[in-house]
Image (tube, rainbow, N blue to C red; front, side, top):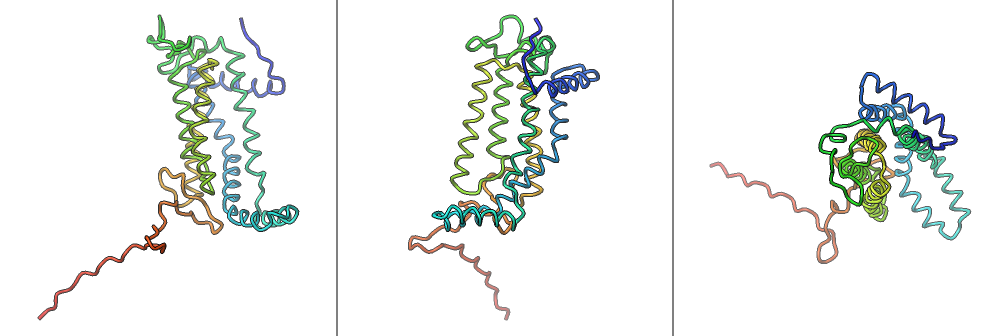
Length: 285
C-alpha cells in the first residue's frame, strides 16, 4: 500500500525534491547515490546563505568582549544596557538576527526529505547502496531489539549508517562549529557534541528511520562540514587543521587557548620562557 503522509504547507517542497531525486536517478540508476548528489546540490544552492550566516556569527563573536563589558557595566540598568547594545550593533554594523534566518530558510528543505522517503517508501524498498541491500543483509540477518543491523534496502533502518551519521554529528559540533567565545560556552559546546549524536542515534534506531533518510542527512552533514571547514580556513585565521579553541576577539585576531598562556611561577608572577644562551666564540690568537 502506498502511504501518503500529510505534509500541509510542505507539499510543494516535497514534490519538488521528489522530482529532483527522480531526475538525478535517471542517469545514475541508484536512489542512494541520487540522494547523496541531491544533498550536495542543496548545499550549493544554499552556499550564499550559509556564508552570510557564518559571517554574521563571526561579527557577533568579534564584539562579544565589548558586549560582555556592557552587560557588566549596566547590569542594574536594563534600559541603558539595551540602548548601549543597540549602539554597539550600529557602530559595528552587526545584525544579531542575521545568523538565524538562513538556518530557518533551510530547515523546511531538510525536514521535507523525511516526507519524500516516507511518502514514496515503496520506491526505496528494492534499492541498495554500498553494504545496504548486500547479500549479507538477506536471509536471517543479525538484529538488535527487533531491528536488523544491516538493512536489506534503503527503506529499512541500518545500524552502521545511523552510527556513521551520529559520528559525523559529533565531529561537526566538536571540531567544525564556530569556536566558543568563553570557557563556559566552550564546555557547553563539548557537551552538546556528545549529547546530540547520542540522542539522534537513539531516536533513529528506536523509531526505525529508513536508511534513505539517514543517508541523505549523513551526506548533507558531510558536505556541511566541508563548507564549514572551508569558511573557517578562509575567514577565521589563524586556524589549525582541527581547531575548536581559538576565538575571534574585538581586534580581529584569534585569541590563544588557555593552555598557550604563560604559566604562573610559585610566587604568583608570570613565568616567561628563558632566553636561549648565546654560543661563546673562541678568541682567536
